[in-house]
Image 1 (cartoon, rainbow, N blue to C red):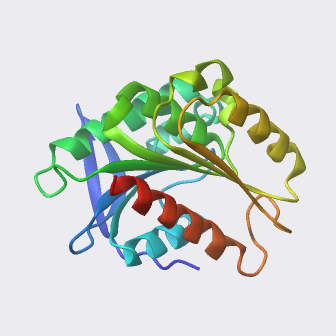
Image 2 (cartoon, rainbow, N blue to C red):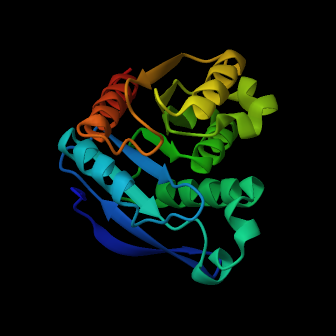
Length: 214
């Protein structure tokens, strides 16, 4: 499934090393940082597929492990939104310090629980995050904080993922930023049906491209 072309890297955060996959596209118009869901990693086939299509649209991408291997052994850590949000904030700061990435507009792509951390980190960074996309996300996990998000936010949900559709519809009402809710017809939570993940990638690339250029 993977279409992403990347270079394996290690991100050092005060002695903590996180594995990442960095793809630098020529004449990039922006950088998208991925925040994966619980139990997933930088190797997520779906996120890598989306990343590959983003790269074709001149978007650089970074997928990284939110947790070390030792941390990931704890089931509780996977759902610790506070912890993974801080990790995402720290990695975003690391990106901002890299010479080859400095000045690129930044966006977040969050999947499942990773969408909650992406939106919370976006609220922290304010105007520094130009756009956020949530794929089958759980923005409802930070419902009381969504009003703080000013980054243009796109929520993408599978039409057959009924419980998550309801969660996203509720979260959508709490967002005060530029926003859009896209329900992909005849798709379940993982967008496994033919052509559905391509549709997610198309919607995402259009959203990032539009808001990175403004």
